[in-house]
Image (cartoon, rainbow, N blue to C red; front, side, top):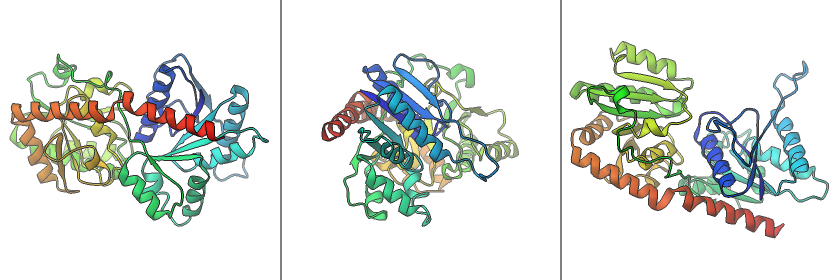
Length: 374
């Protein structure tokens, strides 16, 4: 198949999943065309069957804001015509599914079905803004197929938008051959030369990720045991987190690593992952850590309980309860037996339910059903 994929190319779950999906599809023999305003962050090198088409937005004094939705629709149309695409797969409802709808409408009789995958804030935050609700509902209803990354998000979509069409559950995934426990400790000596315990956080540092809670939790852990903190990613709250680290005298123990394309070597170096988010429709960072054999301490919110069983692959705590989060992290860090047991359970859960080898065929089957119906 020839598949066009559109996502936000920045550091976030939807972009990561869309990019990994494209890479996996290409490895299985499909031609994949990414259509976006920048190269996706996880697409680090040229790959066979992977193509990138940059969307350039016209600058004109009449426009206060560049018309990206229209520019994207035009590029989708052009790529579909030039490359004879079979379908489009857009990640994040706004504005991508609207652009796909316009591109399909411009085909002059040629079929160009599109799939919309809902990832979270496109529904839980953006979509529920009353000014965007009608267009979000319309774009979902007009999609040839709609998927959600968790049962939690599927139910929210059906309820809040009064959707009358099926929304299929296809969960996020991880390549278990790339994300795996490192037998030699990977980059551990680089960050913990005296074998200190390592905590890790991976996100886009938006307010919803509550990175200040990560720092507060680490400070409480650091009072009890020697430990290091790896902060992977970047975003609007990074500066305030760095300021908190300096104010608490933790600068030697906390490392802000910025955006990383090969996060697996960092995750596999850690002992526990912290995910204190205020909202997570799935919790991809936790899953990637789990595949590396790293248990997570995360908020009991959204789709996270579908990924982590409290007390088995990690722990779940209430939002904002940094003291309990620190206690749970210490429970893992101070018991080699518990750390090994939870790490093994985390890896087993990822292998059993969330490996790309199990999830990618679900998308392929969905594509085939759509093409047969069209």
